Length: 362
Image (tube, rainbow, N blue to C red; front, side, top):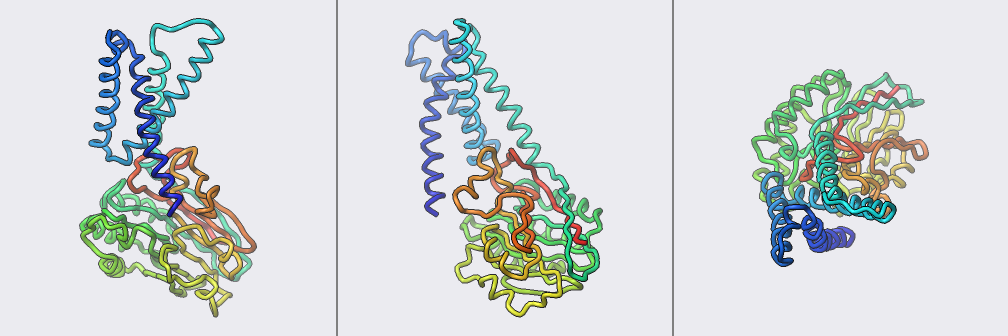
């Protein structure tokens, strides 16, 4: 928790000091630069920054406005440094504020691509091998749909149709299916879409940190309502529970924020090790213990693939997560972290993209 407080403080300071920096940078544009009085230039440039920030809040919300602001700050600082070097080397000054225009254009292109990477979905495929005597199995996995954040229930249903085309034997959802601000109507529509999946071994779900609405944003349905709607549509919900289907053992862990969740060694005590054991654990932060058990495969989400460059690996550097994205093997256990089929408040992904995952186990 202290890490997140530090990040919030750092963001607040960046907004304050960055606002001053951007106001000075904007004051170098031709039209504003022609204003005679310094205080008037400062007022106009500060007002321009504030109006742009407010406009993004209206269009995309506060969190996305902060993301746009921080990228504007980064691009203005980058091109300011570049042109400072150019002026020093060439001894030449420029009448046009090229660094400002290049910063704006670069930021718009960069964030447009980031928006596209977030709001579209790609397929990522893995092939895993096991010595266990099981039939070849195709797993479809997705996490972090955060219904209503990037796409509504109908949009989610469209991506379920794409997943169904891959003919999976089983569909696994390791958490954050909904968000704290998802509404009941969209949740019901999305759950009905899950009910149309005709997979041999069914659809399985474990809770993530947002699914229970613990962050207090006035959601109009409870975790119990969510469970009931999923089960109504033949989705198997597991929370610190084990179930067997075919050659598989499906293990659904309670989210890591649950103080009394079972230790993985306790949860897997007495498990049938002849089965291919798949653990759904929303937050990838228990690799060491999980790799010491009989688990064959651990599937996680939560990190959104690191979300934004260059913070992709901050979670690992700070010891928050054991993995941020992709495949890793420890001992005899395979780990896969997905970047998520959608997102929560942020509408941008850089250094990653939205995805669903197909895993062929042979």
